Length: 134
Image (cartoon, rainbow, N blue to C red; front, side, top):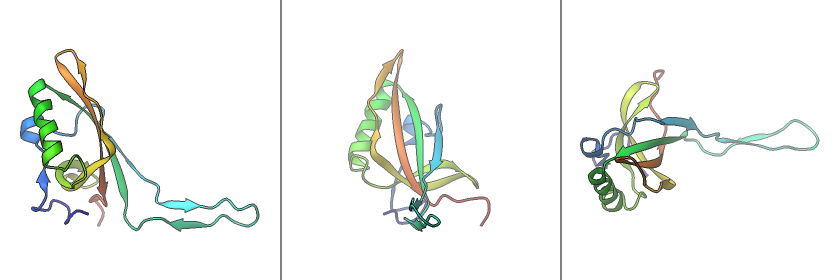
């Protein structure tokens, strides 16, 4: 669990070494947090599964061989193979903000050579992103 968005106690995304997460193919989706019953008689019933809003972020990173090596080392040692939370700058409803994120289950794809660069698909999870309306 993160200590709070942009917490100083978390590792930072290595933007200086490998670039921003906001690259080609970046998108995010808000997970449905309600479960609806489909009863045969009567109106459907819904229940809240989580009080937090969970957002899935997907991006494909284009990395040189050196950047890929740095990312693999950072992912393995600084994020405990993707299990630990870290700070990253992402686009939110309130603009560009530093938020706490972690890799989703199987959130780091396999690096595939594409010309001079490696393509690496990453899936991140964030909770309760800041919005323009408070």
